[in-house]
Amino acid sequence: MKWLNEWQPAFLMVGIGFALAISNVLLKKVVDEGIDHLVLITYRSSISIVFLAPMAYFWERKSRPKLTSGFVCHLFLSAMLGATITQYLVLLGMQNTSVTYTCAFVNVVPVITFLMALPFGLETVDMKSKSGRAKVLGTFVCVGGAMLLSLYKGMQLTNFPESRETASVHTANNPVNWLSPNSKSERWTIGTIAFVASMIVWSSWYLLQAKIGKTYPCQYSSTVIMCFFGAIQSALLSLATNQDYSSWLLKGKV
Image 1: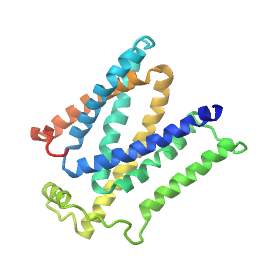
Image 2: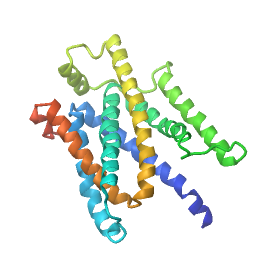
Image 3: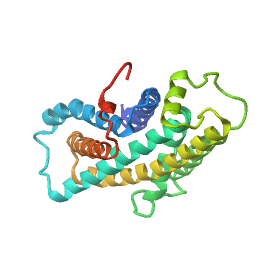
Image 4: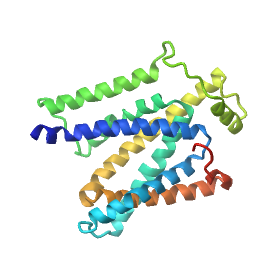
């Protein structure tokens, strides 16, 4: 089963890709209901803590190294980059664009991470080897696919108009007619800027996670701590920027 061990990382990444796609579809449904983004991030991080904490406790209690102040600071920064800022920017971009557009930008993350990792020596490119050529080819494929989905100007690929619920939410939040051509163009511009910023922050988070993984190899425990910090950060930011406490109440299908 040597081939299975060699291809296991690839199979896992494909599985993560499917999970992200499903997650984006569900997030789009929730965002269209008008929920506050920081409230959503707080709930997501809190649910992650409840789900992962027992796994971290039972599976890593004997191998968990001692937490140092420096490592706690790294996890706090990791939560700020990966759990708070990135999620907020992705949700902002998703609210103003579409699920497909979101997935297109998600596919650019490996490329940005790869380019940012080169100066730090975390990635290498040897054009004489198959792996080096595969990395370069994968970079062009990711960028080309993202550009195709982003810049496509042909006929409409789907026949699903914006729902009445979504339109009413947008109208309630902004007096501008969200369904007008100019407003739609402005929304996509805002969404694109948010996505570009989120991809840069997300890629920076991956570089930080690479360092954290080497110094603290207990993935479940570090993820629980990161989610804990992320929940606190997003909750405090939400309370500071939005005094409408009714936004914390989940209703209907949310």
